[in-house]
Length: 146
Image (cartoon, rainbow, N blue to C red; front, side):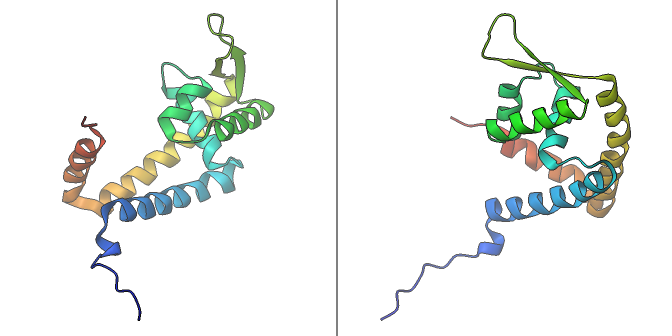
């Protein structure tokens, strides 16, 4: 006798749909910067966070972008080897690696940001009037409740 499963619509299960869509969007954007600049998705995320956050450390980026510490560290090391950023040990906490952009890293972001902005513009166009509602819904979902 086969066990029957409870009714469940996977295609309407929001966590599943959001994960699939986020992966698709990330892969679409990643294809653009990978082919033009040879950087990976983790490298892209590290670059953005080093350029646009007030506390760019490996630990902070790990928390902010939901990447394992080892992936953030490897991405930072690759970016350092390519000359896009510099790692330094924090003076107050020797366990903390601070990251900063080099001039080449700043130049790279000047080339990458227009790609991200064009991607966002395309998404805004595709979403049309529902774009604002989606942002509000995402804001509500990102609020942590106890």
